Length: 338
Image (cartoon, rainbow, N blue to C red; front, side, top):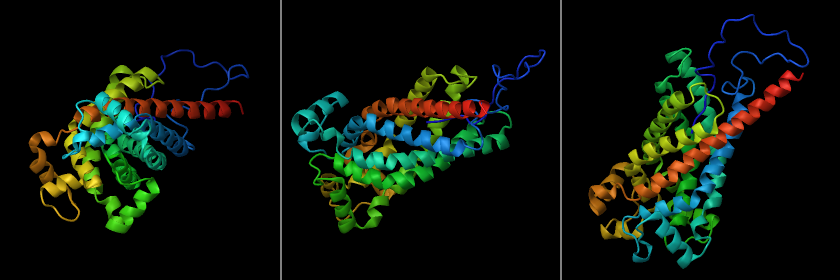
């Protein structure tokens, strides 16, 4: 998801006699650069964090059932009862055979992690994007700055979100032995140690850094063309977010399949290759996926991943931009009323 922190700014006003003298009915305009897309510098960090937290929780909770399907469709050796041809078929089958609430198992730990993870993610992105853009392309919007800022922000996001991902995906698997989030955490800690919660961290970063770089660059590129004034325009945020999410998701699916294997430690798949103990490391994950599914194995669940990411990123960007607009407008109105 994304934002604009004064990068690009608004176009210069046409020449004229100058603004009218401020009156009670005509309050003075906010200082230059402190409009919607340029948050008031004194409150920008908190605004970004609050808007990001709400956007992250909304993104993950609304699309969670599809995320559950994606996890299952990425299984390399699925149980015969858990083989699906499409997202719709999978959701229908899961609900009918395992219960209405089954696609939501693990959503609580995801929401718990998504709030702080996205708060840090957006705040870091905005601050870095602004600083780097001023250095690399003063007065403009640097795509290189957007990509670097998104990549660095991912380091913080994944450090918080990775343990939640491990628990979530183990809860999502077919015939998961874990009855609750706390039971899953205790079992993983007792049998595999604390390191299990970060076993896929490097793979997650290897996936998310290019994902977020592609995502942010695509979003900013589309915004430049369909919303060049960087105004609050929900339709442009939804469209740009959806396209950016789809492109980034399709390009990084092989890495997501490897991450899922490391998170779930899929027993049937590892047993079929006589792998004892726990699989670790990105190289081992890539090798194992190829041994079990060939090149096609790297794209298992690509349909579900794209279907998940398109509305997911659209929701995140639209919610984020709305709250950023709302909070900023409130601050500016409060300031001009003084």
